[in-house]
Structures are given as structure tokens and as C-alpha cells.
Image (cartoon, rainbow, N blue to C red; front, side, top):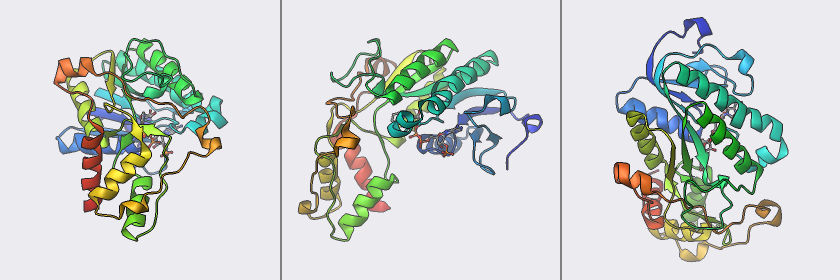
Length: 293
Ligand SMILES: NC(=O)c1ccc[n+]([C@@H]2O[C@H](COP(=O)([O-])OP(=O)(O)OC[C@H]3O[C@@H](n4cnc5c(N)ncnc54)[C@H](OP(=O)(O)O)[C@@H]3O)[C@@H](O)[C@H]2O)c1
């Protein structure tokens, strides 16, 4: 049930801003599983513990006292940022800046989720201190959001493509392969994926350490979506001939067909012993999840 501002008095270990999205939902579940007291926000009526529309700061309730907060709510689709940049900017940049400043003032550690798309994808394992050089409106907004959130005292976690067996594209691939139908993954679009389980585990580590600064979590190497599909088909015991690689349509490809999305992880290695997962490692984890689903 949604609570009005005056009713939100409970303290929590973790506030997940955007509890309905892919990462927010999984993060809240993983944190609760570890025994943390978690509050979530949502803009959807009847969902989450706190009503929060990032596009409308005037409507925000007072935030509860929390140990840490993770800003997962975002306009995360490239096309949505492109078609209505002003609305997306309010959510991706203005709101995180305000939230980070308020949360830090109240003593909370805060994390802003960002993307490899703050860079141009022209070099592998991009260095974290390289200046942002985005090619898309989404990437430009994430770079601005990072800067604004950091000014408010937040840490930043840049992610590459996050995979989970529940993603609609992967479920559709699985269903079609199981039915003996072909799938047409892109042969010219690459990813250096990470698994959602790893993303939530790293965020909880960062929160426990109240780490400042910029963090990376991406795969070690970029390979085409077609390679991912072939790995999954193999692991699921499907006929490999059902994977029919195709070129990305020109309207989708504009500005996004870049060779690299990987980012270096030396800091994460030094702090936690975490390094860039291999493509095969992530594909195997996803295949195992799909096989169980
Ligand atoms: N998933 C990835 O592969 C990936 C990769 C790199 C970086 N990231 C970053 O990680 C973060 C989370 O990504 P995700 O994949 O979990 O995104 P997602 O599944 O699209 O979830 C985003 C959430 O933001 C919420 N939201 C959008 N506009 C809002 C508003 N005005 N007020 C309140 N909530 C609003 C959406 O709410 P509704 O559900 O109500 O629409 C949605 O639940 C984003 O910052 C994204 O840029 C993700």
C-alpha cells in the first residue's frame, strides 16, 4: 500500500528508488533475502512503499531515514530518450541530482546506476577516468546524471547489458527454440554482458562498504548477440540451425552499432577480487536459468 509522506517514518537499511524495474526488483529481493530492511519506491498506484514520480519533484514525500539508497528508476530505453529528451532528462538527470543531495544530507550512502553508453564504444575495457564521449541521447543523459549525482555525493555504478533468464527477448528465444522455430539474433550488434545476479551482489557489497566514486561492472569481451543465441541454443539442446543471424535494421542501428561496451574493473578487483566475467560464464548462467524456467 502507498503511504502518504507523513506516514513514512520507518527507517530501513536500503531504499530502492524504482522498485518495479529489472534491477530495482531484483535488488530489493536480494537485499531482503539477506535480512536487510528494504523500502521501495514506485510511480505505479498501489505499488512499492513510497510513491515517487521522478518526473514530478513537487509531489515527492519526505524521504525516510535510510542507511543507503540506490537510484534504479530511469528512462533507460534509448528510443524514449531520443523521442522525448526533456521528459527523460527530468528523470535521468534532474531527479537523481535532487535525490542524491537530499539523501546525502540525511546521512545516507547513495548510488546512481549508469551505463557504458557514457562512452563511444570505440575501445575495449575503457578506463573509468576517461572523459565521457556518448553517441546517443541516452548516453549523454547518463553522463550528465553521473555528474549531477556525484555533485550530490552519490557513488556511480556503470553497467553493460544486464542479462536475466526472465528478459522477454530470452524467454521468446527459448520458447521458439523449444518449439523448433527459428530465431534471428543480430550478427552486427555486440554485448559484453553481466548477469543480474552479479549486479545485485555487487551493489550490496558497495552499499555495505558505503563506497564512494565510480565503479564498473561489465563483461570482459564483446561478442555479437548471435553468439549469445548460439551458446544458449547449444546449452538448451536446440538445433543450432534454428539460430539465423540477421543484420540490425538501419532504423535501430543508427548510432548504436559500436564494437565495444566493456569497461575496465581494476578497482573492483583490488577491493573485492571481482573481475570482468567472461562471455561464456554469463551465457552459461543464463542458459541454466532458462533451462529451469
Ligand atoms: N538493464 C540493463 O541492461 C542496464 C544496462 C546499463 C545500465 N542500466 C541502468 O540501470 C538502471 C536500471 O535499469 P533497468 O534495466 O532496471 O531499467 P527498467 O527495467 O527500465 O526500470 C526502470 C524503472 O524506472 C521507472 N521509471 C521510469 N520513469 C519514472 C518516473 N518518472 N518516476 C519513477 N519511476 C520511473 C520505471 O517505472 P515503470 O515500471 O512504472 O515504467 C521502471 O520501473 C538504469 O539507470 C539504467 O540506465 C541498465
